[in-house]
Length: 338
Ligand SMILES: NC(=O)c1ccc[n+]([C@@H]2O[C@H](COP(=O)([O-])OP(=O)(O)OC[C@H]3O[C@@H](n4cnc5c(N)ncnc54)[C@H](O)[C@@H]3O)[C@@H](O)[C@H]2O)c1
Image (cartoon, rainbow, N blue to C red; front, side, top):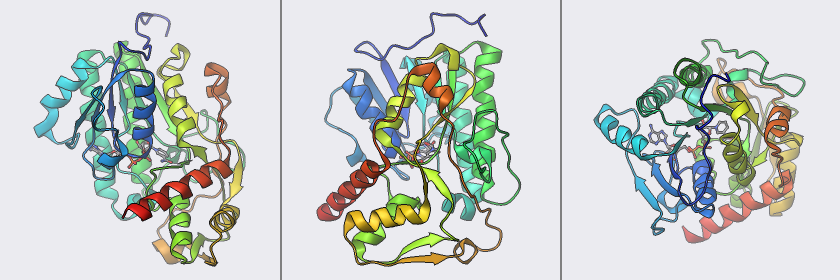
């Protein structure tokens, strides 16, 4: 690993130009905010399949926005142009959400592979540093203890795992850029991230709960509700992504990014009910009744983030409660605008 050049580290400041794919999305737009706060210039490529232009400060002269689909061959030349101009690329563009992965396996799997191949190839040609957001989905059904990066990547042919298998395949391409071509790359495996700008339409649990609570409709908890997750505020996530890309020792290897407060999903629902002061009920439903029998259930999925903390000094600054409150505040504002 030490054979690779040391002149390859990215400093995020006024002379840095960064390409963020998926930058109009939930995490991408928080990352763009952070990069602009560091006085970088930023280009976003987002097809707006799930992102929104209003997530971005479009009038900021340091920001350029392109709205096309990465993976569409018609835009390969444009991708090469943009990667060629960038000092660093964050590749976040991806279809997301367990519901969508389960219901639209082909589109989700091919979407991840096509966009991943396009970005990796452009970074290979232009020798551009690349950070890739994979997913904790690659760890499969979960564990009864915090998951470390050395836990195995497991998938099978149930539809949900197409997302994970595609993410894992792109991880190999990204690792290959580093180990086979000496191009600095980083692979981040985010766990549950949450907070402002996350959309309930993607079926992610916290915005779904908040949306239901604000409408006064039942908050649907799957199975016994005892499955545990750890939620990370999106602003802490963005800080983590930036720190990872400045860490030489993390090149070419996966690193977990996630919260540290494990919480049962039924307790998350209670926090949302309390924080919104809704009279909406919490109801329990078997996941098989929501998704059908072929759904792959995930029990506890909580990260061990000690690698990230040891290597970069990163730690989450915002609590789960704060994350829930910020999500509620954002969704209330959105409802008021609509
Ligand atoms: N949010 C989480 O909890 C979580 C957990 C694990 C991994 N991740 C990963 O983190 C990244 C960001 O997730 P997010 O929650 O911000 O999702 P998001 O949907 O809000 O953002 C992804 C963005 O990519 C865009 N996009 C999708 N496919 C594209 C394509 N082919 N070309 C151009 N743009 C495209 C979408 O319009 C969207 O704006 C994704 O790679 C996701 O897989 C997220």
